[in-house]
Image (cartoon, rainbow, N blue to C red; front, side):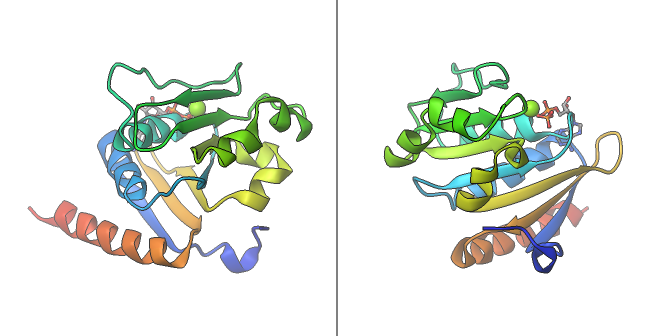
Length: 173
Ligand SMILES: Nc1ncnc2c1ncn2[C@@H]1O[C@H](COP(=O)(O)OP(=O)(O)O)[C@@H](O)[C@H]1O
Ligand SMILES: [Mg+2]
């Protein structure tokens, strides 16, 4: 799958105004994820990819005593104890696609892990297998724009309805 200009408008874009907003988007996404899904989180340093990944892992049932932190040097951390294994990848330091094989990327998919990837653009292969592609942009000190660029149709519909309810709730005084 290539991201092209046709996708650039996105399925939806959300303005997160605080950490909890971002966590709630992660929770909404977790509800539609299935084993074998690959979630790409694109965006610069400090934009909230790790915070989002941790909230996603939690919502998938990874127990609270498992600290979810950036796997920058290991490239991957796998958390069990949730409804599926959760593999959290940070490809910032990836040297090339063949390194993905070295961390057992295909095995993770074969065992039905849900794979969350920071810096997905560092590996060409992620673009081919990503089920969801989310772009994070920094729009202020605690403001982030989250754009879903790619996602399966049924999941997009479910997400759009959950998140529009969430936006309506957020607007309520
Ligand atoms: N709306 C927001 N959503 C997510 N993170 C936010 C938000 N506002 C402020 N932050 C802060 O931004 C930082 C994000 O860090 P992190 O998740 O490690 O980013 P990344 O993994 O993208 O480098 C955290 O310090 C977090 O508290
Ligand atoms: Mg990070």
